Amino acid sequence: MKRILTALVLIPLVLVLVFLGPKWLIALVTAGVAALAAWEYLGMAELGGAKPPRIAVVVAIAALFAGNFEYPDQTAAIFGILSLGLLVYCTFRAPVEQVMPDAAVSIFCMLYLGLTLIALPALREETNGPSLVAFLLCVVWAGDTAALYIGRLWGRHKLAPALSPNKTWEGALGSVAGSLLTAGGLLGLAHQLETWNSAKLSYPDDVWYWLVLAVVVNVAGQVGDLAESALKRSAGVKDSGNLLPGHGGVLDRIDALLLAAPVLWYAQVIHQRF
Image: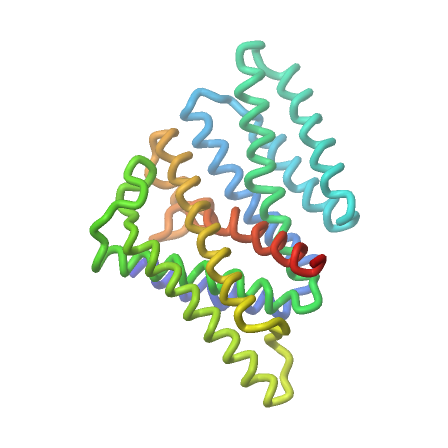
């Protein structure tokens, strides 16, 4: 029940932000989510023996988003400069035996929870940006929900027991089906809105493209979920935090997006080029 109530509160707020929020607010909220998830990740890393500079990493992530907001074509250079800055900071901050784990954890955190989530404001700024972000979120959410309930009802064959013992092949296939059904529903809704002369949703390419994209995004999301499970198990924790009732921590809630968002962004880039 806590899981359902949390979703009922957050999902409408997120969708209102996606369609009505100004560019700066989208970037600010995404950066805030990234910072919260980074704080949880760094806490897990400490359980593994690293002692990363939490505040410095969070500041670096905030700087990465700020730099991307002002100079989106220089994001790679900004990431490189901040990475070198964290390396230098760790070099002179910690005992020499801690420099490698601290620097590695800090820079990876900025990549894992900063550079990946920059794809969200970047997608939002596309021509049909709100529709793209809504597609991403709804496909991932539907896949996650379908995997949970279908896995509980019919799951028999373990998907990756060493990483996540509760995940099954039946749940994974149900997740793909849920994402496909949701993508089809979005396309149908967009077509209906078009007949009413409303452009709130726009998916201009062929239907097959969006259905294939739904599968690709779903698989990326499931891999992202498994990757975060592996990180948690290596740190010896069940949840990354307890900020969201019924969902665990912020990182637990966005783990699928960390791969799904950049995959959708790069898929769009490749599609537009070719």
